Length: 82
Image (cartoon, rainbow, N blue to C red; front, side, top):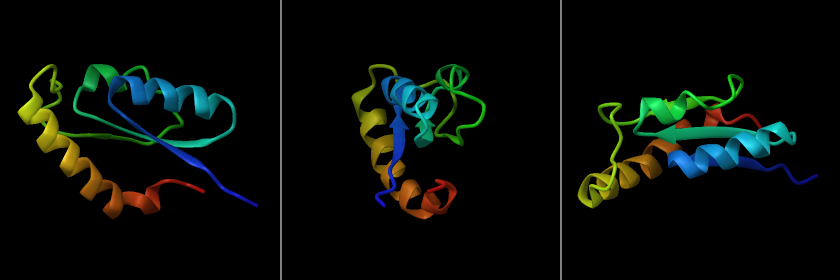
């Protein structure tokens, strides 16, 4: 049987993870904004990157956090229940 988990990155990714989780899929969220993580279902593991204020439209910060996200995901993959 194929097992699928959803990794939500950023606000939009978090919203997708919420929907996927409500339909029975496992999910995990990463965001640099604590405010964005506040809307994530309580049963979804979350990881806050950076200073909790978000990257906004700062592309340099967003690129840095994105590359960190990939490395962190590889290290934290055991937290995503399958």
